Amino acid sequence: MSRILVTGANGQIGSELVEVLRERHGPSQVVRLDLKPPPAANGRPSSPPFEVADVRNRDALADVIAHYEIEEIYHLASLLSATGEQHPDRAWDVNMSGLKHVLDLAREHDLQVFWPSSIAVFGPSTPRHNTPQSTVLDPTTMYGVTKRSGELLCQYYYRRHGLDVRSLRYPGLVSHKTAPGGGTTDYAVDMLARAAAGEEYTCFLGPDVRLPMMYMPDAIAGTLALMDADAGALSVRDSYNAGALSFSPAELAAAIQEHVPGFTCTYAPDERQRIADNWPASVDDTAARADWGWAPEHSLEAMTVDMLSHLREGTREQRGVGREEQGSPGA
Ligand code: NAD
Ligand code: AKB
Image (cartoon, rainbow, N blue to C red):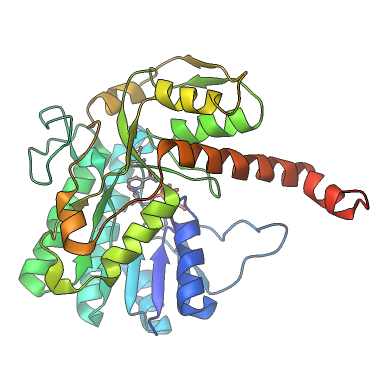
């Protein structure tokens, strides 16, 4: 049974990936690491093992890896696209030095590594539709620059040192358990949350920018499938394209209106529009499908229905409606 370290464990992906890894391997086998302790869940303090550390601190990472005898790392700690444009020096520092430390320590201890890249590696010269696996990569954000540099670093460690590091270029991820943190695609979660609360929404992107998106259960399943795959089957060692959905804010609003008839969305694009305008609308993921069986399951309709249901349930629980109903004899 593997001892696993997840960095950035409190984030949108980490909080869900940890749950699934703990179901698979047992809670004590999965060590979470982040800058702060995790928020209490449903009023209960979250369970150990948890380490407060900064991935820029190599010695702290080394201590955690040695102490828990870690065998596998999911290195998720990062600044995302919008925050990265506000703090480019910090984005470079966290995203690059954190990854370099993880790769060096993984080499030293012979660990398997998962590290996520992003559609942010693409840019204005990249074909916008069905973007190929191998193509022009000219990112326009510091985040995208760190993701492409990170891809090349991972590939270098694989080729030069035989390090088993695997990567996916995630699109924008949609989920209801933990709010997204500082990305350009966060509008989708924001819009669904407002609709579920019966409120209107002002979108920070314009109505027509179509981007590759994915529902979190598909992202988690794909991540684990890639990590489980035979090393010999993997033909891509920088980062795999992984497509799932492709929709614009207006298309998401229309999907929501099917289930929330009075929902209204207005548009007030801000500086994140420029980021979105330089990303693809859809990606070609033939290599991921052929090499390790990538097959996302959720359509826009299925994701919308599931998200609205979970978000409404969350709102009811926050208001105590769920507990009242449970306690009511007539409920
Ligand atoms: P997030 O912002 O929700 O979480 C990142 C976590 O990293 C946070 O909990 C933060 O506290 C932690 N962190 C930041 N700096 C740190 C540091 N110096 N040391 C330790 N921890 C630190 O991000 P996420 O959405 O969960 O993304 C995880 C990874 O997936 C990132 O590499 C991101 O680039 C990538 N990714 C995410 C998406 C998406 O849509 N969520 C899409 C593409 C790629
Ligand atoms: C972001 O918008 O920054 C992320 C991503 C696509 O990498 N969701």
